[in-house]
Length: 194
Length: 292
Ligand SMILES: [Zn+2]
Image (cartoon, rainbow over all chains, first blue to last red):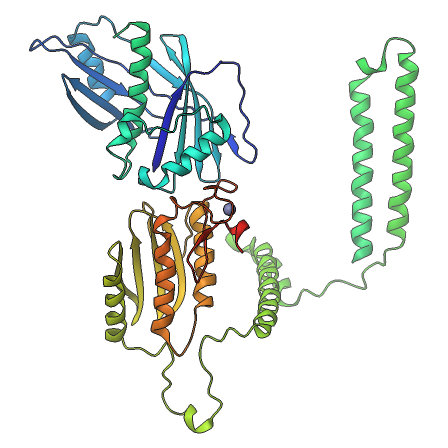
């Protein structure tokens, strides 16, 4: 499933209607829950994310120095994380959510999520997925045309950093998670919370 | 039949106008009647509605009067015995039976239409021999190829393109069904009779292939339709390998299905679909709406 997701802050009042597309009430709901771990000196962060597109899975990304370890587990993993939060120091836990309507137009899937960080509105993320194609490189230009078609030429044509060296690989659900995390990281930095 | 249709619709109109009266009665005086004279206005509205009911009633009576009562009971034939069925699970059979009749009628109608259209367009899938002496000999049509011969031809096409792989299965007797994988773009399943293509289904790279279900994506549903058209376009009963060669060349051009822009309008998308049509000669990509 080829996806390009691009981040962009947007005034909250805009309403969206896609002619010919149909809306369903499903929300994308990705939340992030970093846990600082002070053992062995270096700082480790576990990001736990849920995506309503894969409701039975929990995505976890462990950041340790320059290393990144991704993990996909079933919902029981949430309980493990719950136990871990008691062990770790529970300071500076941030929870970021991205919720909004999901549209389908022919084979495209469009999600408009407003990002909230501990109840504060941060911005809007637009995710465009072109589901027939599994390799990002094949459909990148097509997605770009689609996005610029409704967001205007202000949208940059640049490939998101995460995708840059994965353009010719088969797209996985984890790739979407990584891209959301990248954007959440930027929102966190802009507020000064780690 | 037409009279019955008219009276039924007249009855429907009557019911809806009666419904209007009750709706108005149930709501009583509403805000749109204003402040002054609201009772009078409400009464006028009711009166108007009642007049409509009267007119509609007259229409129904007229329509009913022009109907002829059916002569005697309907003859249901053997199906009448279904009413005497005592087993619980067979009592609902009558409705199903009527549906079956409707379906057979429809199938009959469609096949008649198809027959007519096909007889106008001579798409002959086998070469008929009018010569009587020759007719008794085994014909070398596209469908008379032995499995090893078919395997050999398929293997040659498998080697032809590096990004297109072909595998053969034979789920139905000796006829080959091949799975074609085109890069990471799409997959197709093609059913053969000898070396004659019978059916093509194109799906996305991550979908399950089978002969009977179509892709869940609109793009591949379109490509499947075009593949059927192209399969007939290239068809030549005397040179089956040439047919296949042209078809696979056409099919291979879909390697860039998502990365080609339309030759005419220069855009990637037209009503949210990429160019799914390929010119059979030049293999240039076009949107179906833009094709020359
Ligand atoms: Zn076009």
